[in-house]
Length: 179
Image (cartoon, one colour):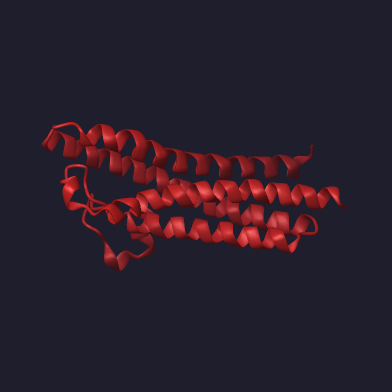
């Protein structure tokens, strides 16, 4: 293994870790933390705790987004220049990029600091997010609004991106075996 192979492995590792942290953290947030917190009656304490968690998770997501963009560009150019690529690989890559860009835009709308940096004119109020607070009355939220919330769409798109990544590896390895 030479230096370039080690660099490729590190870049892929950072990419995978960033994706796992973001999508896994989002799954934990939606499936464990939000339901647990929505059942508590802490009032002001719960709201402060929720804001602290949201701020901390936004910081993690911002770092993950930057890591995913940088490593994704490096991996894409490396892969496209290293071997013959089939049209199926290009199609799946396009779908994965579309899923990732959609996730980035949804995260921006949830009020990540990165999103406020990208669009400085529309600064959100501190702690503001595009989804209702856990303290909001769930009866006032529509089923469609909850089903297609930005957080749920990010998780769904993240899982789709993971599947597309596995599919890309399979297509790439099948193409190399044919050479």
